[in-house]
Length: 236
Image 1 (cartoon, rainbow, N blue to C red):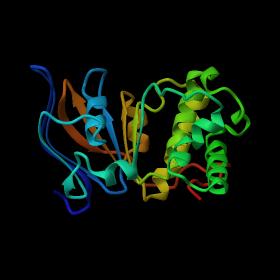
Image 2: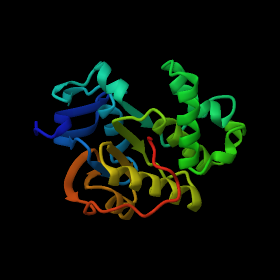
Image 3: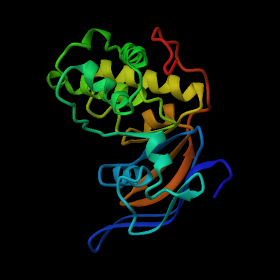
Image 4: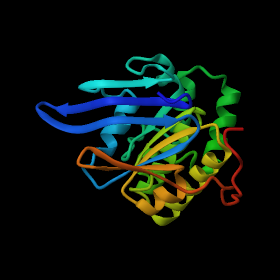
C-alpha cells in the first residue's frame, strides 16, 4: 500500500453467483486526488465504486481504508458519501432533502440552516428550497443529490456518473462545482464516467475499465485553478 493511499485494493474479485464481474489486482486511491473510473456500460465502474464505499463486499481480496480493512469501518462510512447515478429524492421539499443528513447527525439548527443554504446556492438551487423534491427534472434531482452530499462536508466523495442524467445547464454546474472542489484540494473524489473527455478534464488520474478488468491508468489534467465561479465556496 502506498504511503499516500487513502484506499487500497489488492487481488480483488467480485462475482454474482458463478459469474465473475470484476477483477482488480491492484489499485490505490491517493488521499486528496480526483480519480476517474472510465469505461463503457457494463465495464464494472459502478460495482467498483460500491466496493470502495463498502456498500457491497468483495468475493475475495482486500480493500483497505487508511491501512485498515474497509469492511465495516465506521470511519469510512462517517467520512464518505456516495451519490448514485439515479438518486432517489425523499418526500418533502428540496430544503428538507438537503438538510436531512445533518438532522440525522443532530447538527444544531442554525448550523443546518447555514450549511443547507450554502449548498443550495452552490448548486444554483437557492430558489428551489420550497419546491417538492419529487417534481424536479433529472438534472435538478442530480444537483439536489450532490448538494445533499456536499452539505455533510465529506472527506471522500464517490460519484456514479454525476452528469449522466443531466441537461446541459445542470451538467455544466456540476462540472464547475466539482472542479472547484478538486482544485481547492483536501477532498478525495472518485467518480465514474463513460465520457473520457470529462474524466480527463477533471481527474488527476483516470483508471480505464473494460469487462471488469483494469486496462490502464493514465494521468488526467495537471492540477490548475478551477474556472472562476460566482457561487460561494463550500464548505465554508
